[in-house]
Length: 415
Image 1: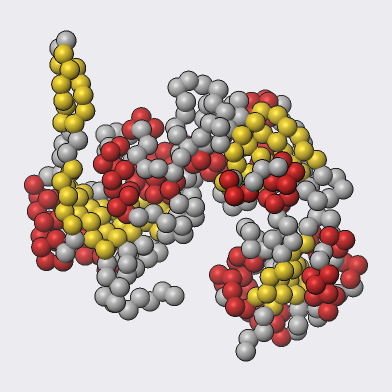
Image 2: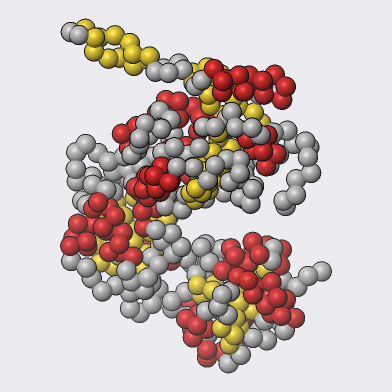
């Protein structure tokens, strides 16, 4: 049986805050591995310290085996499985190789100080992502906790909120939680952006969203079908009602990856990522101006981690990570495109394609006849002025193909 290496969480209060079982594990360790800040907190135990190498992740597999052989332990900040080294270890070496002994996370401490129920909160991490990520859930009246990357994060976050018309939002910077130097400084986004403060590198920012401008900013909920006016576009935009149907058909879920082929304005990939925590998307777009516009839309709508690949499909697709869903919004007549996307899909994954011309409709019809899938023709009409009267104005109909790749249709090479 493989040795399970202990991963011990520790708070800013150091050894006094450790549970007895966690302290005993560290006292018995052959050596303690971790970041310099956590190693300093356990220095008095007298165990040999082993700072992490840089870069860490490529070295982890071999290093982990060494830690296991020497009977070592790993020390981490707070809850190691909450945006910490525990999550990385579980991914790289396997969850069955580690034994996690958590301490309260900084988010748990922040919620406790504020009296905010954790189950009702959205938590964003700016440790590895741009502060614009908060805009994905920035509904006026809502609340969120934001993990800071360093001392610059609170001001960067405040400026993002001000630029989005949310300058009246309440912001409380909770710094050094659990330490003797702990502090909580309230204000508004406008205040913090106008008068930058010297913050600690270790902070959690509590945000209560409030709109300063009218009309209200883009809705911060996860439902698909954001207003068309929320997107910068040159006309290549899947319209709101059709977009809502499309994103729903793709079935977004946490951690899943979407290929948005023929990205246009990026709306499908953006709303896929907004709908599920940890959902990822790659937008493939051949036009450089549109690719740049997708990046701007993604930043402004709270999904700065959307990956944009410039190139023509299917030539741009090899080498991309294997998707859980694919949307082909343009170029369905390109030879081999649908077949390439279908072959790349994980079993159980969904392929959705759209057509607005006779030629592209024929491709989808042929596919459905020979490979299966459901065809739907979507027609939308909106009220519009006709002189002094009002009548219906029809949009161009869209034909949808929706397919689910059967399980057992191939050998799935991924775990």
